[in-house]
Every structure is written in C-alpha cells, then in structure tokens.
Image (cartoon, rainbow, N blue to C red; front, side, top):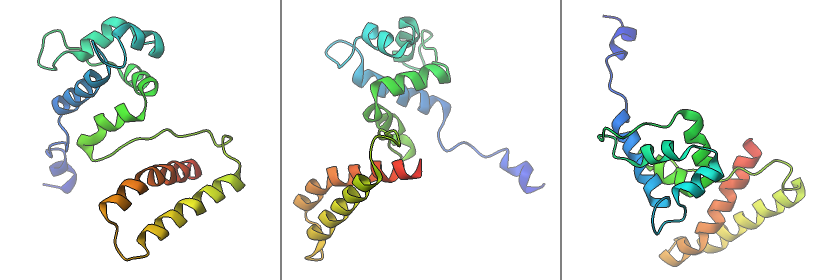
Length: 154
C-alpha cells in the first residue's frame, strides 16, 4: 500500500463535531440573554440571518442545529472580533487578533512602537527572569508586538 493511500485513512486532528461544538460554545459566550449581543443585534451587525444564528447556537447533536456556511461564519467572526475567534480556535491551539490596514500606521511610527515594545521586554528581563507581575505587565506589549508583526507580514 502506498503512502498516499495510507494517508487517506488518517483521522483529522479536529473532528467536525468538535469544531461545530466549539463554534457554538464560543458563540454562546457572546450572544443571548445577559451577553454582549442579542441574536437581532448580531444579525444586524453581521448581515447573517437571525435563523442561521439561532441554529448555530443549538447543540450540534440537536435536530435544530445547522452549521452556518463559511461566509456566515466569517461574517460573524468579523463582527464579533478576535476575542470570539480566539475562543473558537483554542481547540486548534491558535488565536486571533485584529489585522490593521497597512495605511493605519506610518512606517516610522511602527518602527518606534516595535522598538518601545522590545525595550519594555528587555527592561523586564534584565534580572534574568520574568515573574508573574512582569508577565502581567508584558501581556499588552506582546499583543501590540504581535499585531505590528502581522501588519508587517500582511
């Protein structure tokens, strides 16, 4: 049996059911009574029909569950933002962040921000360790550096 034939029998790293469940779990953190958005607000903001959102909120094992198509998923992701996307992608060991337009930050300002971020890390690491307080202080610095790096990569 060739390697190509064997690989077709491998199981995916993430099951379809797990992926659907994670999307619904993340969606339920942001949508519903007492949450950031109602179904109607999310529908109006994302352009995705109320019923599509309601079906996506159901448990994947429910007969009412319907997976939103890729366009609807991306519209929901874009409207809710990277915190939602990160919640969903945690199962794949990944996260998300806003990717700003290249025109948002002038190159000189971007270089200065990268230098400031690097300097903040160096100052915290001078003693050879990062204590819990250092880590807490560096979280926003890290997020900003990741965003700037993604902007450069784009």
